[in-house]
Length: 200
Image 1 (cartoon, helix red, strand yellow):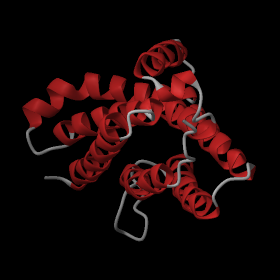
Image 2 (tube, rainbow, N blue to C red):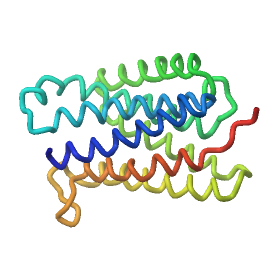
Image 3 (cartoon, rainbow, N blue to C red):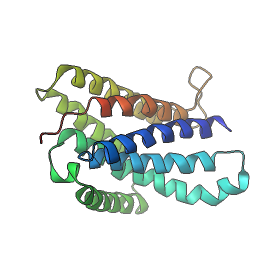
């Protein structure tokens, strides 16, 4: 297993936990659960793409790229929606979450396919910024602190993608993609654990 594949595996396992918690255990957090599904699916394909199995890697390369773009332009907005508007119909119910992700994701993929590649970086950053701004709402203090820390890790990962080149090694240990994955591995659970409570 390569370092890239391992970082994808760690992200996949975290997203699997988020999906389980927010899709089946807490059934009123559909948007967050769907975000876990979209990001986790891209990570699962990344495990295959960057594995030592060259044939499988070549086979899933295009699908992994598409899934990664979809996770960026739909997964992160769904996460932000589940945090910023937890009581909304889209955030609470699966049908609403699916339809919203379909519309947002379809638009985002179309923008990316038409040539505006930075869209896949801009949307996650704006989503994280929305979650940061939402911290100003009066809520349970401990939850806000966890969420703030989680969003901070997201910004660390996003900054690495923008500032580092694909061949750069941070401290001689990790590439920018690996750093992004590990930042998400830490940040996403903190955000979910710090998610505001849904009013019944």
